[in-house]
Length: 124
Image (cartoon, helix red, strand yellow):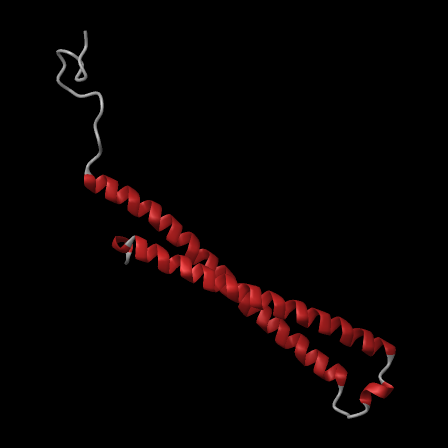
């Protein structure tokens, strides 16, 4: 009959890794999560910057189309009215997206802070 150590063989059936190897494995796992958060932050910031530039462009085009006369809206052609309506809709959509990106960035930063708080040994 074999005992828990394999009878005459004194080597155990089960061995654990060293604490250092466990620490390294944990650091790799936390590092992967940290990298994913950093990539999400970078992507969100890049999207925000690009969208902000396009929004500035749309705003400038709308200002030119809108004109600067007090009663210019009275004589505006139908095509210009349609263009202004379209630009207004795009500007609202862009601003809503920018708000969502800003919220996402705050959430990603929270996750990053929380990860560092829960795994302080992984600070670089």
